[in-house]
Image (tube, rainbow, N blue to C red; front, side):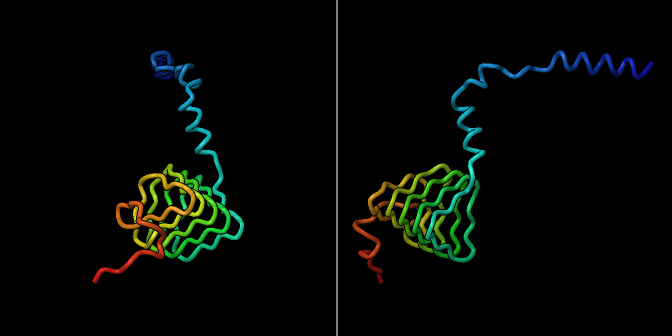
Length: 139
């Protein structure tokens, strides 16, 4: 007798459960999210990675990049070719780092960085005047 009442309760609760909305499956954002989560992490040819570098899921690193020690790369990043990242750099998720970009040590990147050798420094990151070579130490 107890089993039949349990069966009836489970069938009633199953009937009252909200069903997935079929329109949601057609929603582009939902499908994009699923496809992004299924991408592989790819490291390009000739890229050099130092010790204690944490690379998240779905990250694509271009060819001939330099990643110094203690870098944290969050998930779903795209890093272009010939990018140089200094030590202790942190990069937020879902960003694009353009080809030839340079990020100085101890920078926190929270926005996309354009291509063509753009340099970024400080925490939070901001474009610097010129290349990383032009930075001066203030005493």
